[in-house]
Every structure is written in structure tokens, then in C-alpha cells.
Image 1 (cartoon, rainbow, N blue to C red):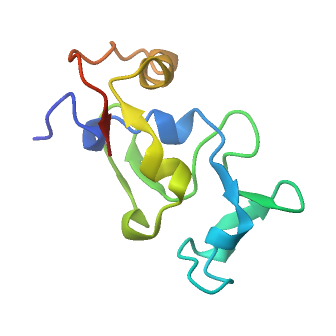
Image 2 (cartoon, rainbow, N blue to C red):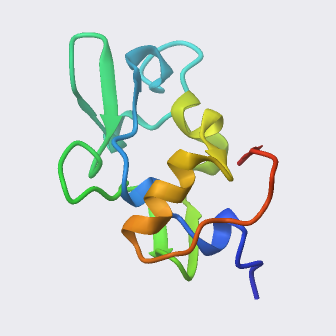
Length: 112
């Protein structure tokens, strides 16, 4: 069973926020890793993960049930936005709260 404070037991951030980032992170560009077919243009220079460009939001790469058992299907290829999101922060707690999940209990932010 997953640790209830683990991102693998949450996923709220992936189903609450728009995941947008620079278009050069797409695998359509040299050095890019995010699968282009999973993105949608937002501006001439930014793209977003499909499913996060509208409300209610849920990233197309998120598998599983939010608050229970989730995982990113492109984890090694995820965008900088995802790499930089920190658990145990007010932003994390806001996303968790939107799904009826309690804030995480620790003092130190942790990147996932």
C-alpha cells in the first residue's frame, strides 16, 4: 500500500492545475521529452498537457484514482512544470483540498 503522504497516493496536482510549459520541451523538438501528441498549444510559445487546458482539469498522462492510487504514465518524460512542483506546499495543499484530501504533514517541501 502507498504511503498516504506519497504523490503516488494523491495525484491532485495533476488533476487540479493547468500543466503548461515551453513548447521546446515537446519531443517534436531536439532535446524535448514530453510526447507532443499529449499536448495542446496554449500560446505561440507555450503548450499544455491535454486535459489540463480546461476545467475540470485532469492531465491525460495521469492514471488511476486521485487520492487513492495514481501514477504518471510519462514520468521520466514529464515537463519542467511537473518536475518543479513541490509537495508539502500551499499549492499542493490547495490541490489536495479540491479533492477533499487533508494537507500533508511535514515542514519541508519535497519535489516529486
